Image (cartoon, rainbow, N blue to C red; front, side, top):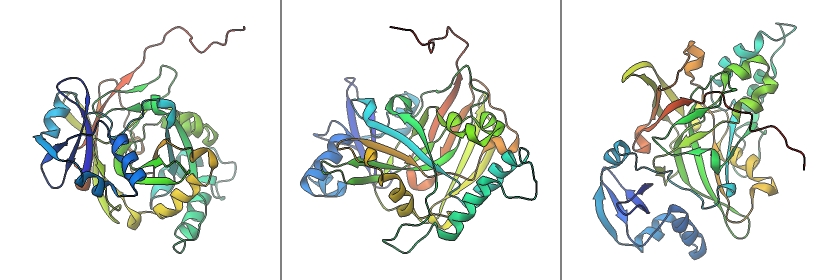
Length: 331
């Protein structure tokens, strides 16, 4: 089952659900957040909650994408109550690019980089027995809901950035219940957009490099995450593909279980505040940056995997230099 949100003919938000190829409007629901909140309140699953609603007309997801009417598959009326976060070095092969980026800065080439050390820690204890926590992963913060970009909308690279590149990932979508318990709604494609040139200067710049917008969707898979996900990440320039590569995800291709990554995110009280939405990205091993691709204004990122419905597409926009709005004023 796949859930999406789109701008309807009256300018409001409609929710759509599809099983198979046909998506249909869900009557009597104004948002995915409303649907998930109702399911938590009633003690039901999303599927059970949907069965209480009739379905309206069929819609064409790709046509909505062409018309720029697709929205984030879940959003919060107060963006400060949506959190974008992620983990790195979680996929088999994901350490090679990071290690190469940081190896040039090592004083002693014979020693392991910190990136390789934490990757090896995941290999050793990232998949503990069910119910037990394993080693904690690398973790980073991207921003709140103001950084969440709808499918089809531009991913904006700020003027001070050194680069802006895609990261094709799977994200977990969560809503915190009134008792502080996290509820997983499902999973979605995501583009964890980052500044890899800045990060390469020094791995301690990783936190800076991650403070960028991100996109996810257009649809949420309401089901367990498939163990073996085989998708494609591509970049188009003037309508032509300039780079394309498979990306792998799912626990078969990871050094951590999803449960372990969830545990180490939601163990913090600050991430269990009732009513908050969390978009938690699980990492990747595929980057165009690793193939010396330098993206430019107007390029379009396209991420797809058959289990997740419509592709996630976003153009790149580079912000021109402007007046320094970050200058602190004294009161």
